[in-house]
Amino acid sequence: MKKYFLLFALLFAAPAFAQTAPQAAPAGGYADLVEKLSPAVVNIATTQKIKNPPVMFGMPFQELPNTPEMEPFRDFFERFGQMQGQQPVEREVTSLGSGFVIDAKGYVITNNHVIDQADDITVIFSDNGKYKAKLIGRDKKTDLALLKIEAKKDLPFVTMGDSDAARVGDIVIAIGNPFGLGGTVTQGIISARQRSINAGPFDDFLQTDASINRGNSGGPMFNVSGEVIGINTAIFSPSGGSVGIGFAIPSALAKPV
Image (tube, rainbow, N blue to C red; front, side, top):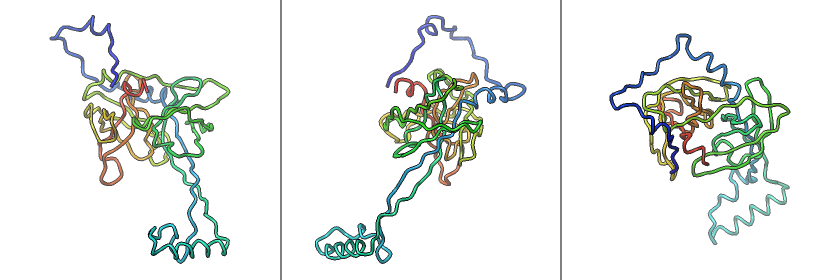
């Protein structure tokens, strides 16, 4: 796995006895920071067209066992359906996720599973501006995807930070689209680093107790400097909702991908 090292940080390292001042929330909270970052965080809506097979006697004939003994029944079901003029029924399935703009020209990062098998992808901004998105690239092993939207103006964007510099206990802020509610802000800390959740060959997640729910996937995890240090991707939850154990792809992994 590629890592980013800062040469100057090594050359001008503090003495071993020096201590880093603990992070503290500003007196007015994070309202100013969130106000600055939120315009670059987007909702991602996808639609997928699925064809359901015709149903005979309450059962899709494709579900009959594919054995020689059942072949006459399969043939009858198929012929009967053709005689009745039954055709596969097409329906649209929609899903929602999150993402963030990384440059003024309209490149957007999200999770691969947010846009997987989508026929149409729409990026929605906090001011309700909507843009059709083009899939530029995707990587299933790291669950990352890059989209591109065309706008007639420069777009608000955020910058990628150095997740290698993040420490357990650091304050983080997550912004996303949980349950389709739109821009929602949660705050917590980094609970663990280099966490493996058996998601693939590049398991190296940041764990956080900042509330992450369905729909947050693909959204950014910020440090208190307003830099993206993680892409919110998964949760551990017996109930399906947040129980304070969420996982984000570190920016150090996302950058080269």
